[in-house]
Image (cartoon, rainbow, N blue to C red; front, side, top):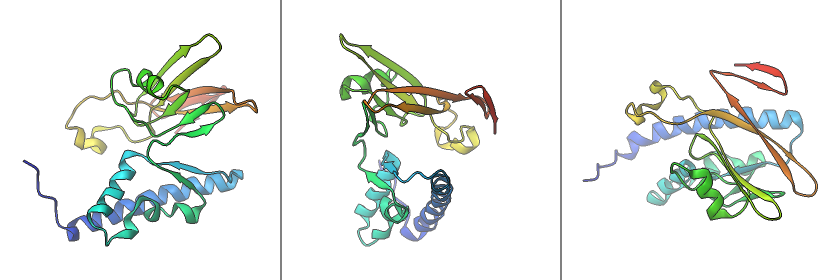
Length: 198
C-alpha cells in the first residue's frame, strides 16, 4: 500500500531549503568556472533532477519548481541536456547514468556502444572492450557526496560500494582522449604528484 504524500504546505519549505542549498553549490561551481574562463557549460540532467520535474507535473501550477527554473541554469549560462542524452566530447560521451547492476560499466558500454562516462551509481568502475581497430571504454566516476551514515539515513544501515573520485580528461583535436581517474581516500588524493588534502 502506498503511503499518502504529505501536504504541499509541509513539502514546499523542505523543497525550498534544498533548492537554496543546491543553488549555493551551483554558485560556487559557477564562480570557479568564471575564474578559469570556462564559457562552455553543460548540465546532464539526472534522476534526482527529473524528480523535481515530476513534482511539477503533479502540481502544474508550481512551474518555478522545474529543474531548469529552480536552478536558474539558463541565467547562469549552462546548457541543460535531458536525462541520459549523451554529451559528446570527441569520441567520449557523458551521461548521468542509466543502469545499476554489479557490472554497470560493462552494461553501459554494451548498451551505448561507445566510450562513455557517468556517475549515477556513486561507485568507481571501469570496463573496456577492444575491437579490431580501436578500444572503447566505460567509466563510472563515483561521487563527491558525503558518504557517512548520518547523511545517508535513507540507506537504513545498508553497506554500499560508493567511492569518492573525479576524472581529468585529456581531449585531442582528432577526438581521441585519455581518462585519468583520481580517487579520493579520506579526503586526500594526489594529482600529478601534488598532494591535495581536504
